[in-house]
Length: 235
Image (cartoon, rainbow, N blue to C red; front, side, top):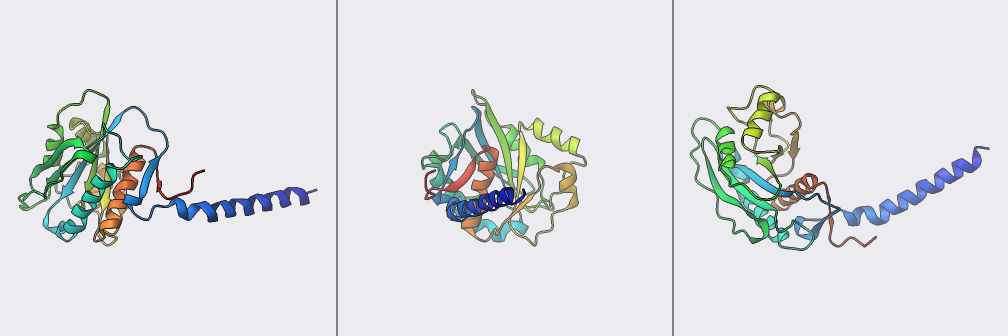
């Protein structure tokens, strides 16, 4: 009696493997510029506030990081990526924070070079959030998300999750994502205490292509879509 169900399960398994073999690799984008976003979105626009840690400990990643931002701009100008009402802002921070790019539509933005920000004795999160708090309000519903490009060697991290949530809300930030440009970077335990939902997303920060693709995947996660290859066969 079990023979028929087992045969059916085996056939389904073979069919699933064939589908994975035929479609899986094609659906994975080789780079950001060859990818698109698929799936529905809600009405809210996305205001992507990128916090760029420009302290001395992050200096080696600067070239790849800025090249990745250039790719992001080119990608956003393509169809099936971000919407016209989505925005990007860039704030450079170390001991102080300076706005490199105020919130603008990503595809139409000119990306200036990083600011010279005083490094001082510490790298601080709160000045960064202070600059984000100064962003002008938008008329339509728009979710402000902080994408932190850092090693999180921050001297003013909140002591608790409740304090972390309060700090983000005070700056008008819905949530934070944490991009760590290397597997060897030791993230302090205070980070997970303050922002337990923002687990480190690690990648090769010396590789501009991988950096850009990581930003794209983060955007897809924020918009609840999928980042897939533009060359993938239609289904």
